[in-house]
Image (cartoon, rainbow, N blue to C red; front, side):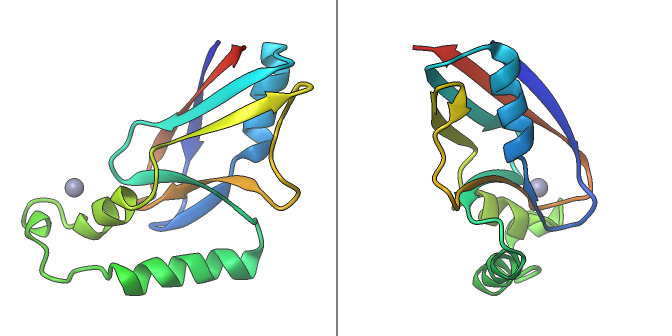
Length: 133
Ligand code: ZN
């Protein structure tokens, strides 16, 4: 079963916990044991799994802003001004695979699925493919 989810983002760089949305789709699919593949089709978004703690999310943003700063004379900025967003996306992941057990995502206690908007605000799409297996 394939679900398409709209994610309207509000900031240029935003980390959004999408775990409740994915869990809802797992329930809707009726899958008890299987896998969920979560995929973003954009070149300036990404997915990650980590703890949804406000301080940590600010640390993650600060890390990327200093590791890959904006406007560092990148060639792609000549046409699009968002090379830093592409580069940040490249070192993250466009997809995640999570096992489903007893009708729920098999995430650890402190794990959340986080959607990273790296060049917002925009209307984004997230795909969730859920298979019984
Ligand atoms: Zn671009």
